[in-house]
Image 1 (tube, rainbow, N blue to C red):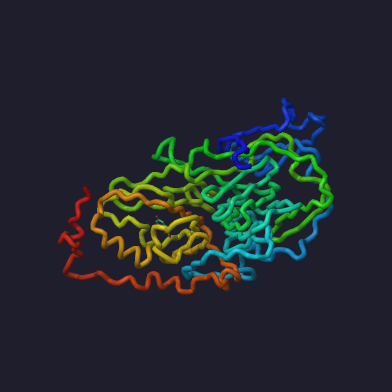
Image 2: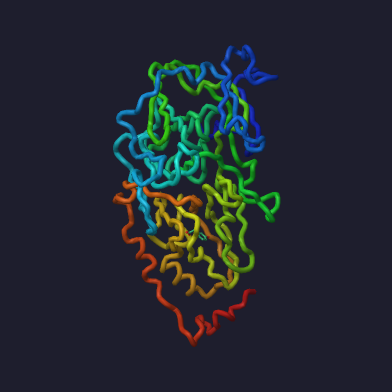
Length: 454
Ligand SMILES: O=C(O)Cc1cc(O)ccc1O
């Protein structure tokens, strides 16, 4: 099934696709009569008047327009673990370092909608500024229902289990190690061929992801536009007597019934599209002489604020790569940051944590909260005597959602049995190596200030 899917490639371009040749109107968007008797419908991802370089919209040519449904009603029972307004009524503030063990899989049949829960976030979907960080644990395909997020864009990071995602633009397949972006307003349905599935979702309000500028790196490197894959048109012309559209609106779920599949788009064109990206295609850059570069060098996608260089949310990865810096403490440095860092682990061991940070788990280091390598990582690093030898970080993939907005944390995340109450212990053992009249000397008798950089 995965192998059969074909994609269009590129980032931010204008795409077009037709499942039946000739289904796309050739000379205009909205002709009096569309080819094949289809309806024309626009999906706007930016205001009509957004400047051309930011403007995003797509035109769908579909069997019936998406408006053809009964009224929306609140979902009862609804998923009550989704938040899109982060304030004192809904969530808590804490500067404490937080870490969660991976959530356990459930025996109860749970699809992606029911299995999604918010961990933390900032701002407001209504005010169109902010973000939410969710996780999901699910084991069942969405049957007879599609999800539509009116609040923001989803960046989905599967950690366990494949995702087959049907969207109005066509089908996408993603496995752990790949990511999917579903922009605000797209209807989609997720099948879970492996059953048990787990992953992370960053939701951004009021803006869209783009590729970071490369500055002095030049024209190539990091995530290449051609590695982003967009689905090809796919439709079903089937009646579904009881199809449900579940709409997330202000963090609440509403449902509306219709008698046909929402995946009835025979052709489409535009630059507002869902897409996927294989993180193994990322071309990392790094220091090649000394010191640890800032993690922003590994930014895959960024969602901007109005302030230059200040992200609403960056998606950053820590992929396999060579470490070659000389006379350098190579793991992530000890750090306090005006930005907030939420981290997840897709597989392997993260370079700053020898234990306790597990695949499927998460950590949150909020604005100005100190963090860094655990005691074991620090001690192991300084006791290695081959300090200048190239070393390849293997078999791991961690990531970070980094934001300039300070998150508030959901009560269920703070009360979760998965919360690691002893997280602080991983640093408590860091001991003083200070001596006011003696330099640190390694086992060969070399003073630390004298270890040559080459
Ligand atoms: O491990 C972390 O918390 C993220 C991180 C990575 C890095 O390479 C440098 C600083 C930093 O905070």
